[in-house]
Image 1: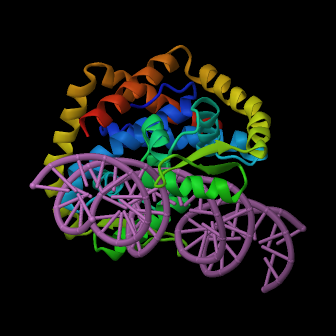
Image 2: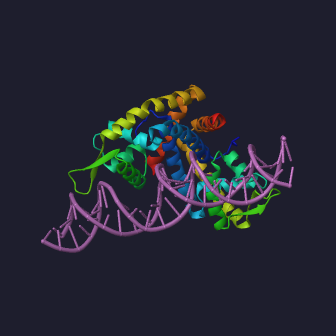
Image 3: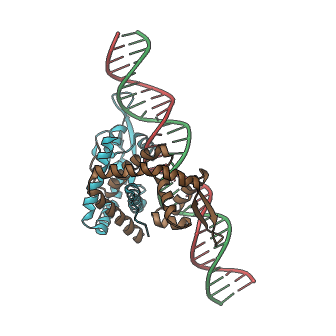
Length: 141
Length: 141
DNA sequence: GCATTATATATGTATATACATTCAAGTCAA
DNA sequence: TTGACTTGAATGTATATACATATATAATGC
């Protein structure tokens, strides 16, 4: 059994690891990690974002995202297209990516429901508190 | 600015990333990551644990821990000693590890206080909810 | 005793993560 | 217009993470 730690960071990391394992397992058959699924979802909602737009929206480091995008491009899930500025490139989902996301969606939804059952109504509170924390921490950084 | 995502997993990962950056930055001068600091703290409290004891207590995968311990051993922070069973080894903090942890403690405490200020009393709720989640998720796994 | 099974840990491989730095391209001021 | 500065993204390097599997040792049943 896990032990109660005084450290907020360690406790949050614990929870993130545990929930990630659950979601990754749920998505395994769909050949997507939860990170990749999240990115595909972001691409479904943000119009031709640059790496930095995604980094901002997802509170991820640009260099982290850079490598993740490369992997997903290699696997044909996304593609980069030229922007106006020759430095930047814009990212879009390929049809292959769209298909895979579509197949993954019900599994993701099932995982969401499982977590809701597991935690009860607290889940909404913890989610908004977690979001608050990200927002405030990235703001002061 | 980060975007509100419906995914519990993505939101928790976001928060874990953000808070980890804060703690890692706070501990940088002490030459410890928050992961390593957490492990040293565990070694201060658990008597000669095996890898699996630590994995259980910290809700980490045994293979993950295996690599982290190797790094910390390489850096002289911890040492392994023989157990009764020839398969297992038991882990202890070295005096070097104790020193480094001692130096890191005030920085860690400062980070804790900062987070408390940033989130207010919600922090306790999110912490216990996060712990609940780990416990329940690892129980059903 | 020996084959089978169980347990403790490590390794191969792959993604996830981020800091420091580099590289390329755009902006702007003198 | 060119040199300084800024900005967008990638790379070098290192830790963090976990699944599948391997390895070594112990326990167990016959």
